[in-house]
Image (cartoon, rainbow, N blue to C red; front, side):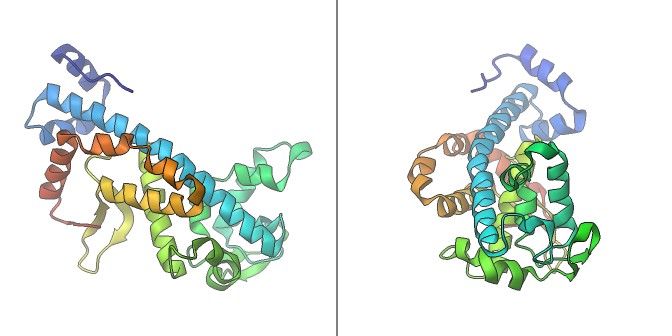
Length: 261
């Protein structure tokens, strides 16, 4: 747990350590006070760390569940694209994972363990095309039929009724994961990169709603751990801090071009 900023000297030291535009956002949210801005930044940093602890379980659970059911249909080396058409993006991510492992110790499980959250999230999308390189099947990857209907629907039964619903939920958790992993602010909401409403408004999710999504996904994939994860209340405690609530209100008032999910 981080110690909160206690004096102006420490606040100024933190300000000097950060990029000016980054600190300015916190300062604007706290009426220009350097001390209050520094305290909000520390709260945000601790919130990111607390979120990351929970994201760990979601990432591992999604990886293990997806690999288990797909391997059950297409075999342990399913990700090489020789039994099912996988798009170039998916195969590239798995080839990059393979490249990190010495040939003598390469096994399907070792490869799978190297693949990040994004690759598993991508398997819930519609699928792109395969150029057939590296001996893979070529053509259009139909993830709706080849992956969702054949395997992935099993792990989302009772949580999401369609592939698109499962993809949207997992995509939101992925964006939360990327944001906290790259030390981006959380108290001002989680930007949904690449998404806009029909009226061209950007999409953004409040931290508490992101926590709900994270717990829904993880609790479904790891039901025996659901009780334990729900008792991990550090994120809840941080979000209950008045400074977090005020920062979110500031962001909502400032971002008039945004629709909050």
